[in-house]
Length: 147
Image (cartoon, rainbow, N blue to C red):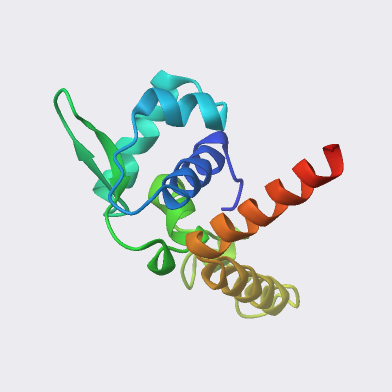
């Protein structure tokens, strides 16, 4: 069920950071951790999940680090979250038919189902490229206000 943990939050931050880097740039775990304010050892575990999910590539060795495995335009916020959290469900009754014995007669079940559909629609509708672009615009706005 949906309970976005630090894992999900940190996964989004890490993929967002990589999405804001020039294409092909390899980023060190230490720079991602520092800029995203995530403990390095914790982030290392998150990055393993993102690599297994095919969102991020890792390179070992002296010039090693991380980069996106595919264009940021093709990675959604939902994919980043589910890479570490697993499938998103708002309620146990949505996991599978029969998971809740009240499925067939509960008047709230359709509401949960609609809420989940809308949530997933929102998360699928936001690509990491769009979020990176939004972040750049916000950063410029803040810098302009500080002057």
